[in-house]
Amino acid sequence: MSETTVRTERQLRGGLLDAYTATRRFVIRGRRQPDVIFGSLLTPVLFVVLFGYVFGSSIVVPGGNYRSYLMPGLFAMSVLFTAGNNAVAVAADMSEGVVDRFRTLPIARSAIVIGRSLSSLLLGIPVLVVMIGCGYAVGWRADNGVGNAVLAFLLFELFGYAIGWLGVLVGLLAGSAQAADVIMNIPIFLMGFISSVFVDPANMPAWLRVIADWNPMSAVVTAGRQLFGNTIGPPPSGVWSLEHPIATTFGLALVIVIVVAPICVRLYSHSTR
Amino acid sequence: MSAPAISADHLVRSFGATRALVDVSLRVEKGTVCALLGRNGAGKTTTVRILTTLLPADAGQARVAGFDVTDQAAEVRTRIGVTGQTATMDELLTGAENLETIGRFCHLGAATSRRRATALLEQFDLSDAARQLVKHYSGGMRRRLDLAASLIAEPEVLFLDEPTTGLDPVSRAEMWTSIRGLVSGGTTVLLTTQYLDEADRLADTIVVVDRGRVVAEGTPEQLKASIGRPFVRVTLPEADPATLERVRRLLGEEAEVSGRSVSAPAPQGLVTLEEVVTQLRGLGVPVHEVGLEHPSLDEVFSAVTSHSAHPEAPAISRAGGT
Image 1 (cartoon, rainbow over the protein chains, first blue to last red):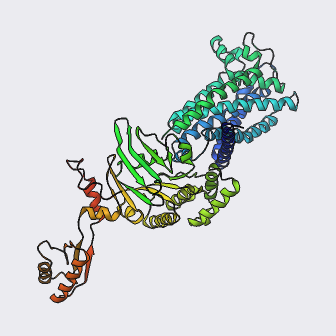
Image 2: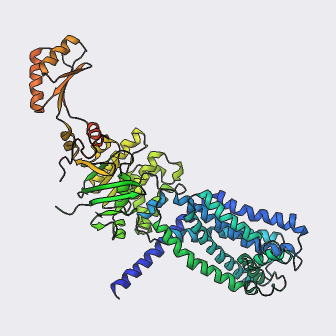
């Protein structure tokens, strides 16, 4: 084996180890911020009540059962909210001395941002579990078997992981935690509401309907509904992303990670306070 | 002599229109403590950030532990410890967890990281607080933990950027004790400070920076000697004008009275002191104290960093220094 191969291998091993250490740090940290965990639970749980019962009573959806229609959307929303926390957390980290400390250590340049994105994925799991409990409580069921349900949740998490990287990117660029909060969370809200998460876009004005149909969030939720068996009739014709929602979600998540992650690594390693 | 632990040649760095470093060169031999002394904004932190690979220099070169800070940054990072001005420990982790995390990042492995963390917490008197979250630590404890963190991988060269700024006197004294302990273990230390007494107490050599330039360097003694000669001070038990006048006349033309003491230049140091003591005995006046005094580093500092009309011609330049 040549010397370069040995060095590359050692670098790779060191990089994986560093990413593990960073993830571990962020998970320990995250567990000690009950306010953040509570915060990311509060909104989707409130949505279950608000939309499932308050608005839901006057919302008509294909298939008839609104709460079965709603829950896959709220699973996806909760995953999205957790991912959005990354923006604020990274922006806060960047304004503290801890970044300087890390940058004088012999750590792989990618470790901290990878650790951040992985830890938010891990910390989001309990939130999703609570949401599944809520879903069960309000009558939602996965009708296509456990395997497909697991696949749906994996797909949601993958999408959340990709959005988590966007959160890291926003956090690196934002300059302050407050700015990061606004830049990240307003689009997340818009993405959630102008989609098929809460209502059937068929009833929207034509121009808004086009946006809602092509909104990736609609594809994600449709993928979930298909896998759970909470089907809602045929997709609007001509919208490729809704005709192939699973492929769309998977592909989009992959593209976001492949494009955004290297940018984040570069930004992080060139950042100075 | 072996290669110096730190060498910087003509470092230049600007931030926009602000010239943080105009020309900074320094050399720190292995196992010694060098204090970078200067006012706020003199360029101390910029110098440290360049030497610790955090910031590229616009021009100039620097080597730390034998490696170039720009081209061989990774090599440098495995050999240095850095304690910055701001606390860098994670508030939501315990003291022990913080140190272990840094240890793991230095690739010491889990077991060694834990062992080193425990030993360092002991060494810095933080064992009792090891399992407490850092957010409950006092300012002094945070600084000590920060210092401990920079030592976890047993670095060859340690950078301390204003290690005691903002600390109360007791915590400062504790930091000094800790730093001195390290040096006796052979670590090379570059510390920045705006406190002269700190430089005087801790450093083997002092580099005075002002507005991005090195304006003086040498050992504390060399710096003091360069600014002026020692003087002898005679203190009387009471401020009795007649007696003060007699002593003043005894000490010669340059003698000055202030309060209940009289001071005069002592060009020959101890020899002059001995003469004065003998003459005082002959004079038969009651004396409270007689001593030889050196100009303080404060005076040196004022002299070399005085923002006079001729900044390019400081009162002294390059005292000693090799």
